[in-house]
Image (cartoon, rainbow, N blue to C red; front, side, top):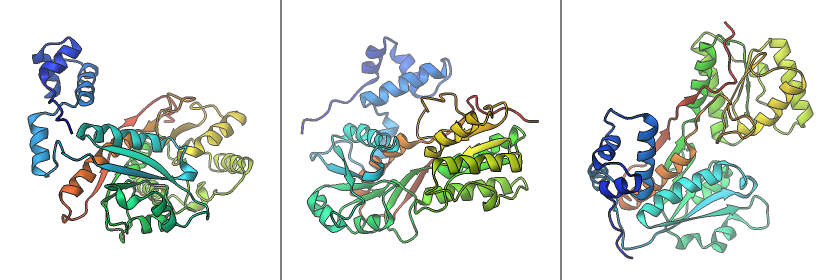
Length: 347
């Protein structure tokens, strides 16, 4: 494989039309420029493949080769029933952009949830034993993950691991995202918050979101009882879910709704608009979204670092290949909170 030419500060300066000194100040976090300009320079440097001496030293310490004589081929396994979710292309984008920096490739393949093939037959069909590593996503059923983790190749779980899974994991910190949301609502005077999520599910992250909600509310002396929130709605018709939501809002006089699962937001929003509840004048709204909602761009929300988790998972995979006997590590990426315009004070 042809050796990739190292990107220099001069290359970035030529691309931006700025001086080398300005580029250096931006990448070192020095004062004297706007955060927007700094972010633009930082992103451009990242896209061009620039690495500082400190970054190269960090790769040396962790025994991750910056350049390899071999092109690795990795597979991202997603569930066929969630193939269209926004989450999957974000993860793939983060993986591919990071792996391209090292000269490697990532291919996404969907694992069917029907009985047309057993998991063993599916693994043989896609010749997984001949690829160099697997990335496993959150919506894969637990039994399928159990089997995939037996494959004798490096694996990285982009998911919250169970104690029995011996594997490295990287995931966006959804628990902290819920906590940030509750803290923001409470700071605005909202104490009657209705949580919409799911407990009747095998997806560990959804259960952890409810646990985070309960604990965040408990810190302020507010008990979150299951029967007062919409967390057992899997399988219900849309109209019935809407009615349950409106009943809870009226009975509890809720001033805010926290939507813990993104695919519930459309009917939650519809319920409010159909019933004459104005957002945010009558009820404030926060939702955990994979990305910017095209219909509600100013939605108040925690920022879930899904793409960044893909990039970090790529680094973790290369680290695992270079350190096959090291202890397993679990990484969670914490994002910021976007205040948006769907929460108002009720003090």
